[in-house]
Image: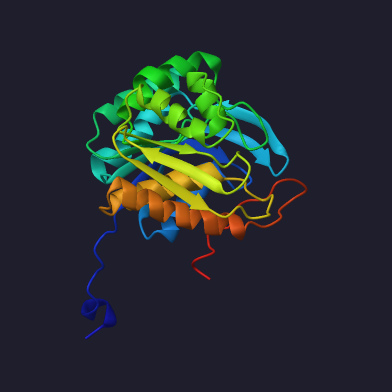
Length: 271
């Protein structure tokens, strides 16, 4: 009997869709998302929202795709293949935020919203005119919202200077309607401390801070890891804890690439 007839076809893995921009340097955006999903054993799919000319030194240009193209990509994937979780990243404009929020509202799957506002190098990736749409349309669709402290300030006006401010930041983000808020305190001194809360229970996630400047793609990686866990049937707390462990290792193994900030290492657990 031919081998092809003896082998049982594998069942399809859990499917996760990333709706985000492209990073030509491969460290963040959909490239980081798909690498993370592969590391978690899920099938990653993508809806491209923007193309960036980007390397280790920063973003040198960005071109947004039409909302019609974003809708067509999303419907093509969801209507045929289906999804067990969706992760959003760079949406750049009010029109794209509105289009994606509408699509998410009609999708029966957990959603991780990474409200990307600026790049690791400080380059703006979200128009000021889009902020209200993120607050009123995108965050209410989120199972988990994962802002860093700069994004918290941009969305809520809350400035966090120490760990005690993380609780206040979480409360401000939860007012916009996500089920859970994960406030990432990586910009604070000391250990890398994040707060996950739904307003009723709190989970503090701590990890040692690694002396490594090569951290490009951290936020994308974290959010994609959470979405991968949710797609595999984990609860929010379990998925976030596993994602925290993974991203901590990825930061520890981040490597130099180019003349600027290198990426985290998405394959560190696969070696």
